[in-house]
Amino acid sequence: MLARLAENLFWAGRYVERAEDTARMVDVTYHTLLESPFGEVGRTWEQLLEVLHLRAAWEDRASAPTADPTGDPNAVVRFLVLDPGNPGSIAAATARARENVRSVRELVSTELWEAVNDLHLELRSRDLDREVAEQPSELLRLVRNASMAIYGVASETMPRDAGWRFLALGRLIERAEMTCRLIDVRYGQLDALRVPERRGVVVEDGGFHHWVAVLKSASAFEAYRRRYRASTDPVDVIEFLLLADDLPRSVVYCLTSAMRQLEALSDGRPSRAVRLLGRTTSSLMYRDVAELLDEDLHDFLEDVQARIQEVAEAVADEFFRHQPPGEMHAVASS
Image (cartoon, rainbow, N blue to C red):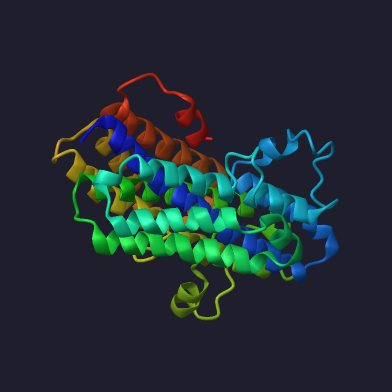
């Protein structure tokens, strides 16, 4: 496979995942704030912008002389959904996913191309500004469901060849990094949280509703309830999202699944990308989350994110670096 085509498939997977994650997190945040005190609005939107790595882009907007999301919360939603100046918006991510898939039409099924193209055209045909202002939930649900349908179509119509593996690898790396950032930002900014000696984290002032929002942001709330019953211990939440080997959005699940794709793409060779991913996965699998909370969870998660980015760079070096990075690479890695 040509390096350019492999790269386009890899980034198509990342962009579809990014659009889905953004839609889900915006929807969860929007509904959570409907039942939250007004004083939490600005802080909660700021946290979401940090999770999505878009805080700086939001503050730099020429149309936002103040970066206070309490002034107009819908402005944040517009920024994340449709702002043409935001390369991380849902509209931008779906457009880039569509362009990447269009460039590899000969490697993907017609059904997959139609699913990606239909989502792009659907968003272009709608009055997004009006929908965001009136009731964004329907729009966000459409993006979420269409993104999941894209992966379902890919799974059911593509052979498990190199094209499929690059698409899946991009999705899994993007998802693992997003889950890390979600845990890191939400844990670090919950002022109500106190960490005693090992386990049994104390949540004051009804703070567990924040962790419910975190679980819903990872499509993991029902699965968590089935496993942990009525537990409201954030240690359990963090352990589940980091280490559950059967949860599709846990960091360990994503990294072990990515390892299978990368090993197949490397033909069993112990490449640098494989070694980096193996070390990153091993550093997580046998961790005691309570001990991490006693030490410094933030530093650990920062390190995991840095390692995931190293893996992505190693994949690019091994498979894609056929020319100096251009604008697409700069936007894609933002």
